[in-house]
Length: 501
Image 1: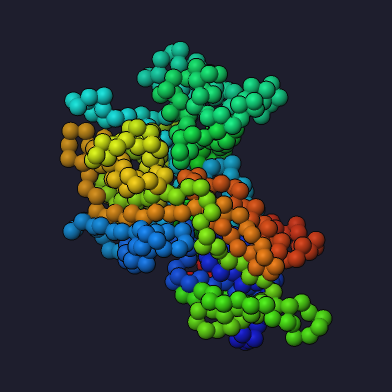
Image 2: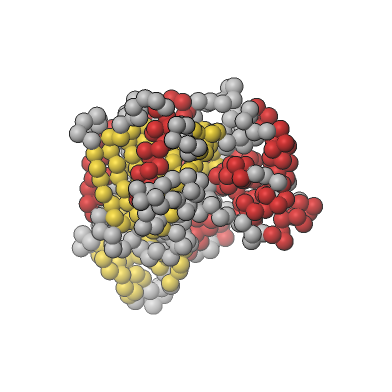
């Protein structure tokens, strides 16, 4: 068997984040020599899912507020008791729901990778409504997102229902010529003002619609908003009644990343965790007939030669930084995970939106941006039975950390009514910088930008994966049709045994 240094690698992939792992999946049947490394000792990169011990260690490494890369300002607090053993938890660093109409799911199906992933239903979307006075309780209102939901809702006045129905019908055909004439002249306007002027939706209904877009700043444009709502509505019922999106069990996107790496390992790729890249230089080929090569030095002092290198950039080039709070809560929160349609699966994820202005800090500062809480039951495999995980996110600001704490406290209080709210057992707070997720190419080196900040997976990230694949395979027309199009392997059920995690 050749050593790492003796092998002529077609590509070295650095990092096991989602895009690098999807690239590994795409190359898994190509016959290429692939070396896949990661400086961490776990898979997933910025999409990793961590045990409590791993989360504690991760927070120490990313505690600086001035650190490079995606994460900064991490800190952990925990209760004195109530937590289970560390590996009973799988905390996702960047959880995202995946709409049923996502191209990502189509590629997982065509590559047969979906067989190794258990997808769970994402259930209801709620809006937090603060108390109108000191004596009134805060409430969570479920957002109607189908015709049946609207008809069944008893809190929306009949006139408002008609306006909302008119909008939902419009969105389903918004790209038709007749409807495009209405919205395209206002494509860059804010969606909320368009909803008011064209459909006479009141402020509450505007909040419902904007929440379904999962807009981080609440100021999504008409064009982007209509696309997002259309994706949500057309995804409803694709994989089953009563839900429009799914979430991979055991840690979200981290699970997809591991499946991609597993497929590449079955195809012959070599994996090394705990080793990153310390230096890269171009060296002349051994003979004049060959192209120059990359000499890549790993952090374990091994040097390898490769035709190409695909890595992740640490430069934050996106417009948004998120403040995140991951909370383990001592409650099963049954009411959050009820199926609302007969025959629908029990959802494992619910989304709660706190509209701008609905939260206040200790100094009276109100929230300028929405705060979103993605609530996960223990059925996700991310925490023990009887507990839940709440992932809270908002646009970073000087007050965002306190507003996330306020959102968590308000949410738990709304569940408890006049009882003692559930206890928070563990908190992980951090900032996450964003990027475009696009691939930049410099000669034989491709670099993925930091992942875009969003609460739902955006298929724009897949374009960079395809571009990296083209770079590695060299545009060979004979294999071009193989991209993410695989037949089942013989003995596919045994693939897990071939993956050395």
